[in-house]
Length: 628
Image (cartoon, rainbow, N blue to C red; front, side):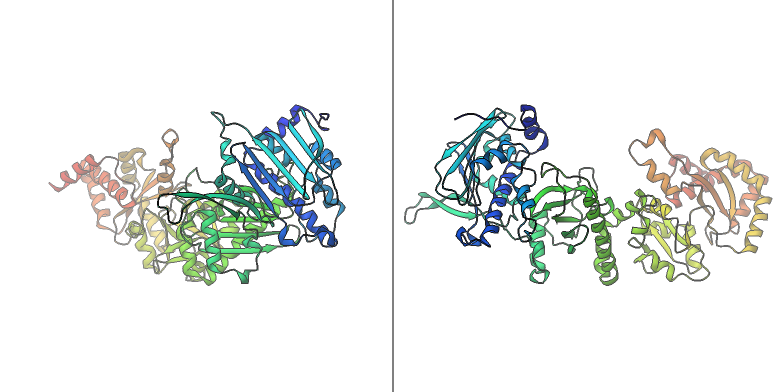
C-alpha cells in the first residue's frame, strides 16, 4: 500500500481549506450530510429508470453513529457509493466535485437537486478530526474500497470489506484542549441540534440511535439503558408546502421555534418568486421588537438556505436597514456559492433577491395599512421609528419607498394619520402641513402657537419621537405641500394687512427690541413683535436649519458636549397683549425694571417651549422682586 499525494496538493492549500474558509468548526457536519444527500439523490435518480437498484424512495437514508469510547463519528449513507477511481479522483483532488460533474452530465435532472458544487466541503472534516476514513462501495461493483488520510501529507486507497452499497465516513475526533472543545461532537444531543440547525430540510431522513435511561418495571430505583432510533430532521420545509395546507398555527409554531419569540407573529409573508432569481421566502413581522432591537448588539438579516441547506444564519444583505425588524428565511436554488457553502458571492443574484424581498415587504405593509388598519397601527407603534430612521438615513434615496408608510398622531382625533390622509383633508385655505415637536402631545398642546393653528381649523401633527423632524426635513414636502414647524420664526397665519401693520409696529419698537437683545446677550438672536400668539404673551421661535427640538436631540447624543449645536432663537412678544404696552412704558421710564421684565419674559418663553431655565435661582429671585 502506497501513500499518495493530493493532486492539487500543498500543505498550505489544505491549511487554507481547513482554517480559513470555514469559520465555524461545526460546519463539517453540514458538509458531510450534504455530500451523503447528494449520493442518495444520484442513486435515487438512477432508480427511476433502473429497477436493479432495488430501493424504494423511502428506504434512502443517512445515519450518524457516535462512539465516545473510541472517539469516532460516522456519517453513513446507502447512496451510489464510489469506485476506487472515484475515491482517488474526488477525494484525492482538492476542489474536485463529483456532484458538479453529475449535474453537468445530467442536465435534465429536474426532479433532483444536487447540493454539492465544489468538493471542498469534505475537507472540513479535518477541522475536528485527526484521521478521516471513507469506506465506499459503488452501485454495480463487487468490491469496496477504503480511502484514508491524516491530512495534507497524503492519503491511501485500498480494497476493504463492505457488504452494502453506499459510503461510510468515519472521523477520529480530536482530543479536547484548553481552547477547543471537541468532545461536543461526540454528544448525541449536540449533534442532533446541529442537524436541526443546518440540515433540517435535507429530503432524506437523518437517523441516529439515542440511549436513554428508563425505570425498570417492578424495580424501584433501578434504571436500564434503552436504545431507540430517532429521525433528526423534519425533511419537508414549511415554505415548500402549499399555502392552503398550512394553518396559522403551523406558521406561528414555526416562527416561535425558529426565531425564539414567545408571541405569534403579527404578519406572515409566504411567497415564491420565479424568473431571473427563483426563490421561496417565508417572512415574519413580529408583534413587538426584541429587547435589543434599538441597540448596537442587534443583528439584522434573513436566514439563507440553498436547496434546503442553511448557508448563513443572518444574511444582512437581504434586508434594508429600515426593514431590519423582519425575521424569516430565503431558500434559493440560484445562489452562486463560493468554494465553501459558508461563503456567498455578492453577485447580481443576491442583489436581485434582496430587491424583490424589499418590494414584497413594502407591498404587504401597504396592504396591511389599507385593509387591516388596527393591525398596522399596532405594527407602527412597535416599528414606526425604524421607518422614520429609514427616511432620514437614506437622505432622498428611501423617501419615495417609505413616505406613504409613515404616520403621525394628529390633533383632529388624537389618532394616527398618514401624510396622504392629512393632505387629502386639508382646507383649501391651508398652504402647508403643520407640525410641532415635543416630548408629549400634552406639552405640544400648551404651546402658544398651537392655539393659533387650531383656531384656524387646521390639523396639527404631533412629533414626539426624536427622529421625526429630521425625517420630515428629508422629505421636504408631500403632495406639493411644504412642512412647517409652528415654532419656526417664519410660521405666520396672518393676512397681508395684518403683516403690514405688524411690520410697522416692529419698526416703531426697534430701539426697545435692541435693548432687550443687549440684555439677553447671545441667548437670542433677536426680539420682535408677533401676531401669532392669540392670548399668550410670549414665545420662543427658531430660524435657520436647526430648530429648538433638533438642538435638544443633537446635544443629548454621546460626545455632543465638544461639538454642541445651537438653534438661532427669536423672542417673540404678542403685539396685542397688555405686556407689550407695559414693556414700552418701562423702557421709557424704568430701565432697571425693564431689564427684569425682559429676563423674566425670556424665562417664561423657555419654560413654555420646553427648553428649560438657564438659571432657576435667578428666575425665582426676579419673580419675588417683582411681586414685592
